[in-house]
Length: 256
Image 1 (tube, rainbow, N blue to C red):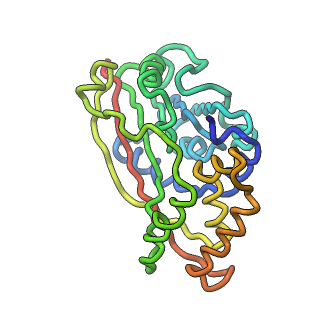
Image 2: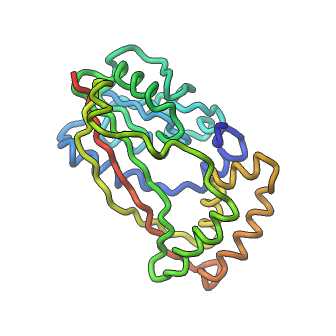
């Protein structure tokens, strides 16, 4: 199931996903030592384009693809970015076409072996595949109770759908696919939410989308539940809290 294909999910995603991507792109720019912009980059599973528009800082010619036409209908900066519908494993571009491919918070949904074959086809020699993830670690500054609420209450009510989190990102595996695992970098991103914004973010997660699409609940029912549950973490509707997200970046280079 593509959890981000329904129009209702795409609409919420366009409004509720935090924009942390500029910070991640800065890390990529620093590590790759980019004094000048790269020529051409592709952002796969780009969603509404948050991760794609961030590439404009380091790339001249930016492309974004996603399986969901509904997500792309909300895509950002269409005057500067070339968007198209495509699966991660089958892209509509010529061989050896890109200096960089990025994937943000999506590789766990792919058939990863097939995706790596396609990425190898698309990248120029010695070019980079950069995977990164901004993931929820249930860390609210100054409130340890929130850390327990997320797994003990939220995830028990809305468990995460199955995904591929156990892929072997090792050189032993990747060298057979013409890639070399060079480095992994980890850090945190801090996002400020009020109660309504945090509730909206939760409704963009596959946990809740899955429950809604299976007719186990409705977004309206989820919002009522979240409003009640999150009230203990916010003094009132105008109060804001800082949520820390984990972020990792995998730097993978095409071997030849």
